[in-house]
Structures are given as structure tokens and as C-alpha cells.
Image (cartoon, rainbow, N blue to C red):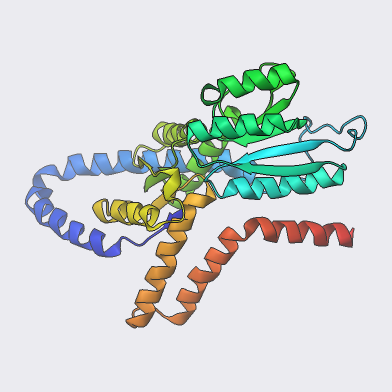
Length: 329
């Protein structure tokens, strides 16, 4: 989530509103006072709910959830897991972690790439099945888009693990496991809604930027519902960018266009980091432009750039902290 200053636009808006308000001030003073008191009460109630909701999240957990249970024995070695990788860059990150896990138990991990279309996904899924792996993994694509390969996997006794889908597993082979499903994304959307409300002091306007995957819409709807239920003064808009545009100027242009057309928007919720890259590009570009024209001090500019490094290097930073903690223990 990122914030941008709306001071200049707010100043012009305030001038116009003030001119209209002067003529109405005397006649409407009592009504306005009551309205202001009501608005203040609504904001205070919102902030109270936000603080209460976020209190458990303000400290790191010290134990794993109870449903994280260890295996009774190590899985048999020598098996293969294949991950189908599309156009979302985080698919490659997931494959890298699965490769590490596979090696730890004596398995092999391979990836099969597809071009992001349903047709090629189904073709590459069948290709993966022909290699007789123990497991095939895929992210984001719901059951409806791969019905035939799932049926073929079930007949072949291959376990299919789908992550980031709203569907529930249906058998012990074929679609047998799901991770980061609908409950998780509902929780993520709701949590980010409360973080937005706290950051904006229950008075902000946020724009959601997402990809056309059903599970991401779950998170977006959860975010919107939580904001509407708690924050009367907050606003939320929804925007989609295409998967094929990730890493191109199209995403950056869409974000810039939204911010230009809606000056009240000071917060962006991008749901996944691959879309957030566009936000970082904008931030660094603005810093560079303002530095070149002498309108930003170096200290503030460097702070923004360091913030981008921390944002996108968060996983590596946390991993390093965990390694250091284990070594110290």
C-alpha cells in the first residue's frame, strides 16, 4: 500500500468550498455544528474499532498455529514435483521455494512454463502428466479452467495442489490439496482494510489494483466490505490490470491515470507484490524528477528509495533475521 501527497489538489478544492461556505455560514451554523459532531463521532468509533481489530496483529506470533502438524515420517525419496509456471513472476518465486523443500526430502522439482492462456495451460498440464510426477502444483487458476487435466490426474493417481483458488479439494488424487484459499484471502483483504483505515485515520480514499484471478477478487471484495462496514468517510475503487502487462509500462500508466483522475486517492492496495512494482516505479521516478528540479531534499528522496528496497526485499530480510535468530539460539 502506498501513499501520495494530495496537498496541492486539496488546497484548490478548499478554496472553492470556502467561497461557497461563506454565504451559508450564518444560516447553517447550527446544522453544520451538529453535522460536524456526528462526523467526529463516526470517525472516533471507526478508529476505536480499528485499534481493537489490529491489536492482536501488532506483535509477532511466538508459536505456530495448531493446524501446522508435523508428518509422522519422512516421505519416500526419489519422487518428482512439477510446478506449472505462467506469466505472474511470483510463480517462479514459489517454484524456487518448492525446489528447496523437494531437495530437503530427496525429491526432484521441475517447472513447466505456459503462456498464460487457458489453452496452453491445459496442454502443458497434460505434458506434465505424461512425465508421471507424484505432484503437480499450480497457482491462481480455478478448477473450471482445468477440468480435463484434473480428471486425467485423478485417473493416473497424481496429486494436484492448487494454490490461491476459491475451490475446495475433492479427492485424494487429482485435486487433492489447496493452499492460500478463500478463507486466507478473505482474511488478508480484511486485515489490509484495517491497516488502510488506521493509516488514513478513517478518512482516506483507496484504489485497489488487482489481476483477473477469482481468488484476488475475494481479497478485494473483503477489503471493500470491511471498509464500508466500519468507515463511513472512507472510499474504495476497484481497478484491474492484465497479467500480460505485469512488468510493462501499462501497469504504471494505469496507476498514474487513476491518481490523476482521482486526486483524493492517497492509498493503493495492490494485493500482490508483482502489481506493486508499478507503484515503486512511480515513487522512484517522482523522486528523481523532484531531485532534478530541486524540489526535494536528498534525505527524503533517499528515504523513499530505501523504503522500496525494504518493501521488495522483505522476504529476504525476514529470512536473514530468522537464520540469525536460529544461529544465536
